[in-house]
Length: 159
Image 1 (tube, rainbow, N blue to C red):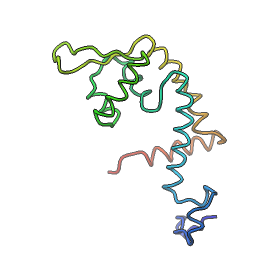
Image 2: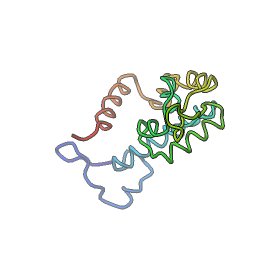
Image 3: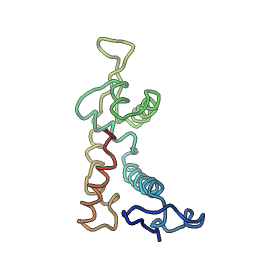
């Protein structure tokens, strides 16, 4: 079990065995957050796979529900490079969720818009209850509320 200082902070691990423990309660906070995020992402991808989506493509579909965007706008909003967005869009296009058409004013750009198939997939995959079940597996309602507050604090950008 991790020891805590008088101020409530965990002490540094005292041994290599503590750092490599199989018990997540013994892990450093960064490792714990990373492992939890990976577990949730794997399970969320499993949920989204029913519609040939994943954690990277789903937010793009949700953005496109609001209207067409170009690749650069989507990349900026999703905080990825244009090259990464290009791969995401190629996959969404192959699965019939989006279509790319030449931009009306600038032929070097393409407008990306959601198809009816994409709209239906987004609506079905967006089940908030499924997302919450995956992320909060095993927690009480009070623990979920506390986790939400803590994660929001961690996710906020530094001042």
